[in-house]
Length: 113
Length: 117
Image (tube, rainbow over all chains, first blue to last red; front, side, top):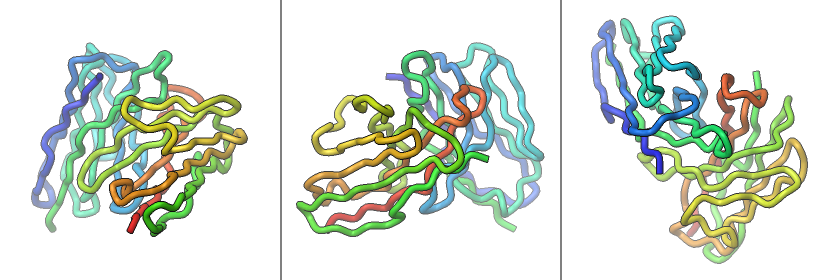
């Protein structure tokens, strides 16, 4: 079973601060995605990283895929109250298990004005 | 972008009855869809893979006779929770791959909150 350890579980910060969320595994994933989920809704895709060492930016969000494709990070610069929500990382096993995502435990982010 | 429509969004049913949840890809075809379950304050757990034109494949520990999956067309997959019990109460979510490529991630439905009383 491929596990994805996501940390921290909870993050409470002030507006303007920076933060980083980590996802780590002992297994290799063919790709890794980051999602944001609002209460009572399905996850919404933020980004997919496929290549080891890849870095993608989405406005104030920076996503990185580890060189060995076992870990990833999400960095938010100058957090805003609108960033508040549940962030999930998910690894795709690929191959015959394509699409069978393994999700991290999630990070509940609260940004205070 | 790709849209996956899931309904109902909420359903309350009596113990022992069956509930059907539908998942439709609105602007693209999906030969494969995935069903997840999410308990309160927990992450998503994959239940099964729905395959158009063939049998679904279930993850270890998921009862296939309890969670019936039918992928009748390239745009519709259904999950039926049979003889539901209170422990089946959960948030059920479907997903489909975007444009069939690893690079494009997956689109999720808006989820179905099932409460069995």
